[in-house]
Length: 94
Ligand SMILES: [Zn+2]
Ligand SMILES: [Zn+2]
Image 1 (spheres, rainbow, N blue to C red):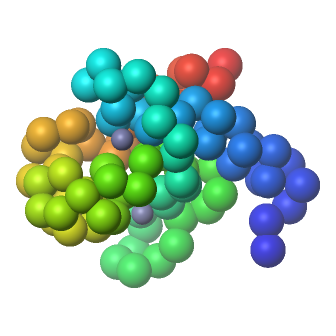
Image 2 (cartoon, protein in one colour):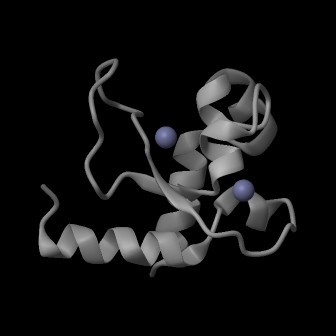
């Protein structure tokens, strides 16, 4: 379960809109939360602060090369690493 502070953080992140759509100049798209797993063991869930906002297309339903979960390597080559996007999100919330 997320704490109150975590839930507030998650809603602030979601309010940014999809970070990829913003960077690609597609404007603000309603986003869902993607948990970044950098620095963690395989398959381990990141904390609720290591999250980036992605629209459903860029997150899971856009297909290979567009959706993160359809192929994370090619996705990060195209849109930037999870880590750099996470840093961008953190800067935007400051
Ligand atoms: Zn998007
Ligand atoms: Zn995800």
